Length: 177
Image 1 (tube, rainbow, N blue to C red):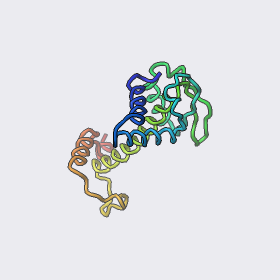
Image 2 (cartoon, rainbow, N blue to C red; image 1 turned 90 degrees about the horizontal axis):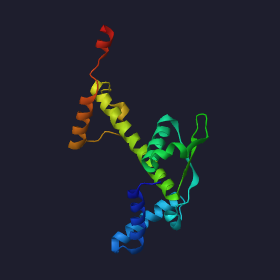
Image 3 (cartoon, helix red, strand yellow; image 1 turned 180 degrees about the horizontal axis):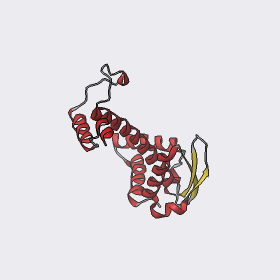
Image 4 (cartoon, helix red, strand yellow; image 1 turned 45 degrees about the horizontal axis):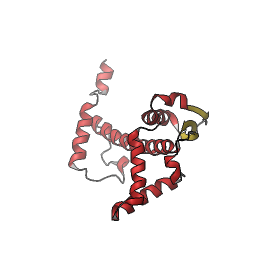
């Protein structure tokens, strides 16, 4: 079952959409409508506690592991008995079935998508840090075509911190070792 904070959040969004004032009401209505359309959810289903089988697709080991983590976050330990593989695609997306309420399924979809996108952003950032740390970039920056922008102070600090946490290995050390 979805933790109480998530249930309260969805109910609050629905309440704000119905009873909010001014911009607060409009923003809540837009967000609720957007999420309901995106995930094909009816308003009454958000409060329905009936568990059904919902399909979740993913591609690759990382997204599989992330789906399990998000499922665990929302459903707790019961995720292991509520999730099973349905279809496995060779080089395609794999489908898992999770038995949960409509609200829980919505929350799992939203968070899985969010964390997959966030992971992709973090991978890009980590790659940039790795290239800088090990100084394996071209002089004319061909690889970064279209990405040449000034980094903010905060981004530079974050990059420096990440680079500092990386291993300090070189090809020379590897050859000598």
